[in-house]
Length: 318
Image (cartoon, rainbow, N blue to C red):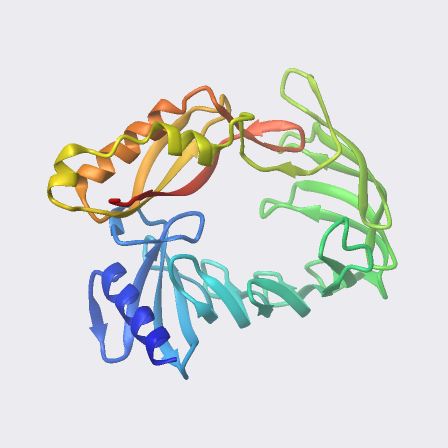
């Protein structure tokens, strides 16, 4: 336990630009919730304090310094792992959502509120009786409109979801707390954006449409970033060239990079999360740039979307 506490302290010291108050630490994070030692590359940050041996209490802020969440975590580096109570806030600081996590997985009762403070929905996260589909599932118990009128009670009812400007975003039904039958989503101009069919909360098929009317069929709402058959680990292992200058300086360690894979599968906007040596950083970036043409973009409702990816590139002297 003493060694674990020492390692955690060392990691915090490495990743934190400054300590601004007694027992309170600021840590910066990338989009993917990976900690970074470079504040300019961060998208949000945490101000945290230690609660016991392994629990951290934190307040989360966006890059402009506006509070957006409060909660607890059992791990803060290299990735944030939420645990126990969690609350998010609207920009006006009204409560938005509240619930609990268990090792980064939502659990138990969660509530969502409208900006006016009225309850929007309540549901329960629990183990999925069909874990081959997903380890957890969310059962909606109640849903109300912004005036308080109940649209879903005891898991049954039809809802129309609206954006902040009052435009219809999505219409569909719940049966026993799960999405059921046909759900339709709409663009801001009122044109149909997608149509999906559900059975007991499981997507059977869907079709999305672009501005030109092209149809994109899908059976999964999202798919992650992919790599060609060689595999990203094998590609990196065969492509890295240990810089001579780093060898002479006996420099080693792991460079962690975060970058965007655009809709064409091209790495863009490469950011350094952490690195032991600028020479090693340069080589790691070269390898990622060399991987152009090997990535498969993530998809959302059948369409390619830009998404960020984080990867560690190790350098070890033998």
